[in-house]
Image 1 (cartoon, rainbow, N blue to C red):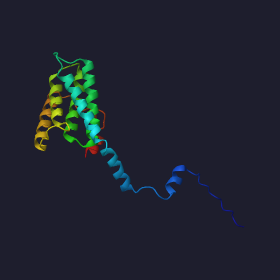
Image 2: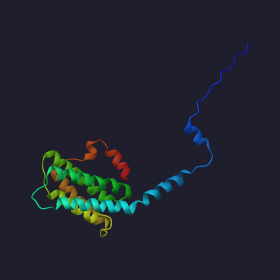
Image 3: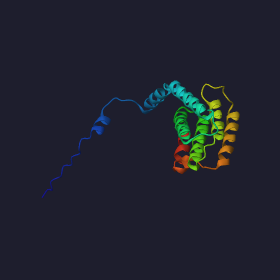
Image 4: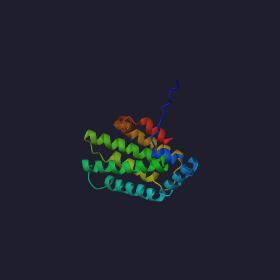
Length: 175
């Protein structure tokens, strides 16, 4: 007695059909095309970085003794925009300064402190590190970042990325 074999049917999945088609692009070509596409946006992104820093300067150097909650929130928004764009376009020192500004501003805001001076120091540093500014040597940039670290250490608020549990992700993305 022969046992009848059961037929197995696999459902047709559109992705499987597309993958089975000939043609397409090699991985290296796709990566190069993506990198070229991002690079084509560099000039516009660097303009946006400079605009965000200019907005930060307007807030940090406006007349008045201290900032208010709305000012601090605006600082966070502009600094976050700088972080997003600097990370994408490889401006490492500026990225670190902007992240430090975010950490400091968030800490000050949560503590109900609206001190202008530490914000202004960060904004001045970011201005010097901005694309299109006079190029600093890596040593000078590191020295400036170490001074910002001293300011941040004075307030001891910690890092937003550590608080969110994203430190490993950010460090691997920055590498």
